[in-house]
Length: 135
Image (cartoon, rainbow, N blue to C red; front, side, top):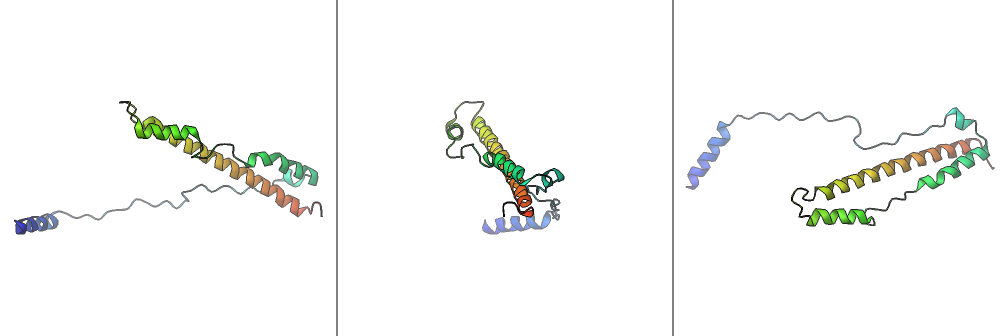
């Protein structure tokens, strides 16, 4: 019996046509988000030191996120519970998974917004340094 199974395996291996697998094209662009570097335009260059400070101070509240983290968000806890114990026949946990995906998208959007604000603040700080403000 063992010889028969070995023989059948060898017949299947050698009788089947083998084709080379072609790999899909590898993207040359970066996969992850790369924030654009904010450069100072002429409007920023024309600002006085006081105006630069005022613009930086106005951007500071936007540096922070007010969205709770994943584990502190009660809606994420409820969505996880829906995934784990959902017994509704049609939904079957998809509602919870959908909300978790939505929550992740909102968090990604918030991270990108914070990066943009940080870039603007750093551009204004570079202008402040170039003008030798308050030395």
